[in-house]
Image (tube, rainbow, N blue to C red; front, side, top):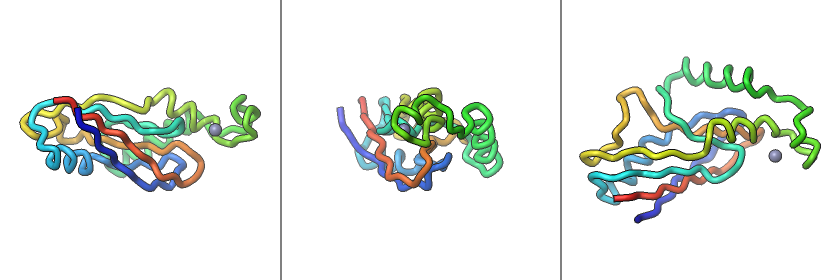
Length: 136
Ligand code: ZN
């Protein structure tokens, strides 16, 4: 098994960043033709998912996250740590921080309109690290 990392700077506050190209670079560099890539974004206020990465859906994802997990003061987590990001942790927990992507014929086996996207749910800019485990 091989390990690689992707690092991205985010603006926080539901910043959505397409990391598909960086994953494809790793596959090329490591000469993966068939296998499975396991991804995990490190941290409890970020998430990864797949989506069609276009401006309308980026807005829609932000709107839905605000509706489902609004930025409110009264989450118990905020009282525990005198923090302001209870909603950020909830978004991460429910969206999840990891998944598998199959690699077939040297390419990520994803749909044409299916990108791998990191969502930074925290309330401030962050440097995020995604660990990539390559199983061949
Ligand atoms: Zn917190």
